[in-house]
Length: 161
Image (cartoon, rainbow, N blue to C red; front, top):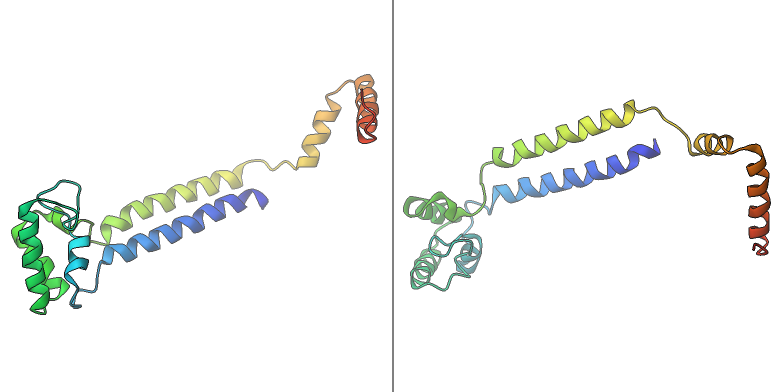
């Protein structure tokens, strides 16, 4: 059972990671009115590859940030702002998948892999540490066993050579 403890710990971490991923996949509340900074931080810039809109220094990004600020001050919701962005820019502007299947498929694959590892761990023959130690000791010649035992006694008494 102790052999399964690391596997159980890894499985727990995977479950936490999957739950966090699923939570992030949902994104912000669709009906909430965000701040302009929130939208800028979660939106990938269509003008600077690999940067958020907030981090992009281009003049086009500055204009889009002003447009978003106007939408926020007009009371637009996350859903309305995202719809505007998706209608005018590539899908990558949203930044992370909003589809739960985009997270569920990899999560299912990881869990299936953990299941295979668990099955293999349970199938292996179980040998106890004591049994293994006895096997090793019995493999040592009897004369050497006596010498090793004497050396260990001297070492334990701090009188070894």
